Length: 319
Image (cartoon, rainbow, N blue to C red; front, side):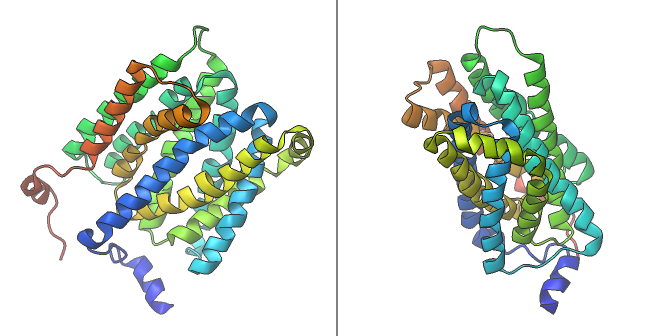
């Protein structure tokens, strides 16, 4: 236990050698993006039968319960007391406000447009993490992130309806993007300050669930009227895209920069297209295939390492 406390205060000691952690980080990132992509299918399946707040509450109740089991098995290590209010802010922003905004936005926006707006977040993270977290602006990230975002734009433009954009829906999607970016930066700050990833995710989920309690009555009504398959979709959202995916997300974020980690999520729309094709029978257009390919290419570029000599020159060794 003392060793754990000491590791919190020593920057960088929680990072194993790059070679040993590389495959695990990549696997965790893959789990995260696949499960988050599947969330679009789940929201689409359950959305017509649940109020946005009710769906978020059921999802987070299930997710918080699973995360409690994960945290207990892993070992709960509370963050420093002075950081607890930041943990609460992060949890309410990520697990309450973000879910409410996205669920509400997808009631009036098609999934492509919503994804296009929400995916402004990784670009925000790249800029602000470079400025405020001192992560800098690596060339692979600067080149790859815009390419991936262009792919998202193509997907969104292809899947948009002929009806004019709904201003309220666009603002809600933009709010979701801001929450995504801000919470990613805050989570990275807490992890860098020594917070244990699994415990942090669990505490944030509990805070978000408590903030959603005003929707208890609508949830009770929706559970009585919703078909079983819609309810099971929400349960799925709580177990997999929430509990498991946010656990793997925290694992990756602790071991990578905020900019690089968030840019990885540009793969989500491409995977969502394939899942929608396989599960819902929605055949993608050629332009959507092109957009998906650009997403994959952009993310691949962000994970590359260019000019190692130059990187060493810009990052003086710490003794």
